[in-house]
Amino acid sequence: MSDALRLAFTADLHWGVNEKGDEAARRLHGFLQADPPDVLILAGDIGAGENFEKCLAFFADLSCRKALVPGNHDIWVESCDARGDSLHLYEQLLPRISSSYGFHYLDQGPLFFPHARLGIAGTMNWYDYSWTIEELRNSCPDWEERLRQKRFLRGRHNDARFIRWHLDDARFTDRVAAELERQLQVSLTQVDRVIVVAHHPPLRELNYPAEGPPSVDRLLWEAFSGNRAVEALLARHGGRIPFVFCGHTHRAREEQIGPMRGYNIGGDYHWKRLLLLDWPQGEVVAHQFGDPEDKLPFK
Image 1 (spheres, one colour):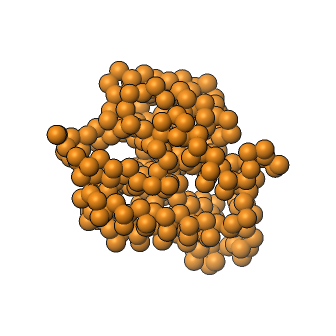
Image 2 (cartoon, rainbow, N blue to C red):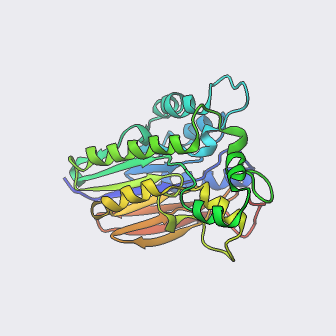
Image 3 (cartoon, rainbow, N blue to C red):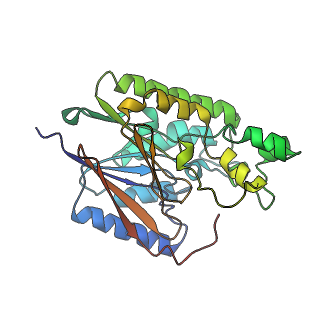
């Protein structure tokens, strides 16, 4: 049996946000339907509320294996939400919905391709402010209050409004980091190499690119984007992790981080991006759907 695989990665489909974005996602779907890969992986922010299920239903007919990690938008809830709190969505409701449409929920276990000696481990990932907390302490007198309220100089992070659970960010970060470590330990006893997929960037090099001086708002965005624990975990196993893929920032990036090749997939509310990886050759090709120059306000 051949060890060749074609893997397709996309992120930030944000189904239902606007018609331009949905049309770009339909074009992406048509591209995959015309030449299906071996596996499709969605790297989070699939659709908030009922749009999570609507998006999976739209992609369910693709004749390939399918997997996903959720994003922060996918676990947003309103007050007194009949679906439960954000943790219930993450641990119970979204896995059930994913399974019903043929998607493997990577946050609860890796996906294996034994003939290729390859695994895929995944995590929504989270943030504990560790990327920039020292800089915030030194530059922002009210840094603790801004982190607690997720309040920028201009505006507020929507996670402060729609993430509802009994945990704080540091405790949830500990949970997802521990689960990813468990997945890697299990995977590396069964296969030679593991590709890691996350929503929030698992490596700082894949986060927002530096644009201008380190303003308070930029430091806060970085604080709410990732964590050092997962970075350290990937570094420990980096020799057996050839690729890392993520989303969240809507900014495409490609970086070599030690032995790992890292990709932030990119795409935005009104246009989408798809990366195709041919394994084991390692060639990655990007395809774009929609016009990134037709910009909507950044959210």
